[in-house]
Every structure is written in structure tokens, then in C-alpha cells.
Length: 168
Image 1 (cartoon, helix red, strand yellow):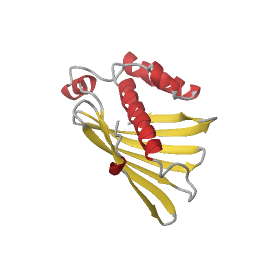
Image 2 (cartoon, one colour):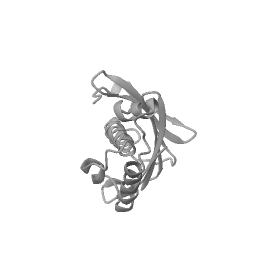
Image 3 (cartoon, rainbow, N blue to C red):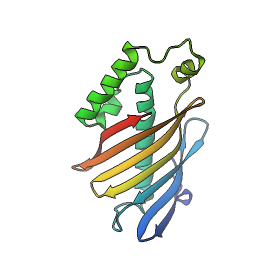
């Protein structure tokens, strides 16, 4: 995890707070750019590097696990921990469709790559829509194939729970 606060910049443009930085992922030290924008002037925690890093890693991990679900690897216990029940049902249904209909035919070189190469996010964008709603988009590359995932989180008590997870 990035422990350096020097990598993060805070801006306040057009009366809206914005934080930009990078997180370092993987064993090769690849950096992924992150942008967090608050769509209301009093957006909480947008100036907190700890908040930005913590949720950037959460979204990074969830996007990679979402890509793994698409690749036929199922909904992991760690992913379940951050998903709403209806979201778990939808992802399990997608996982079953991928498995039943063999959407990823391994004879096709492109699909074989999807199964073998790990997912690697290229950028992460957050939007703090309200104090209770956060939307995230992540560009995930698996080999030469680009996927875009969308995650919508709602604050329930003190945790952010994912209500919608989509990849395509």
C-alpha cells in the first residue's frame, strides 16, 4: 500500500473537492491512477489520504474479483463481505451462465487469455454523489482485452456496501 502522502494532491475546483493520486499494486509495483470527486461541497473525507487509499484498494480488489467472477471463478467470501444480498444473487447468476454455456471457449486464443492472465486495473474513478452514495468506475485489462466495471456503494451504518456491480 502507498504510505506516502506526497503522491496525492487535493484540489477544490468549481466549489467541488477532488483528490488525485496513485496506488501501487501487484508484485511489480505497477501504479494505478485514482481520482475521487465529491459532487457536493461538504463531501466528507475527500481530503483524507487514508480514506482515498483505503477505498481505492477496496474498489481495486472488488473490480479484480468481479473480473474473476466473469472468468468463471465464482463469488469469493471476501467479495461477499462487501456486497448486498441482491448483488450476490446477480453475480452468482452471471457466474452460473458463464459456467453452463461455456461462454469462454478455451479453444479461442482471446478467451484462453481471459482465463489465464490476471486482471490489471488501468484507472479508478470515484464519485461521492451524496454522503450515503458512492459510484466507482474501473478500467480493467485482462491481457489485451479491456473491461469496464461499475460499482455503486451505499453507506449502511459505518460501512460502504456494494449495491450494484457490473462488468462488460
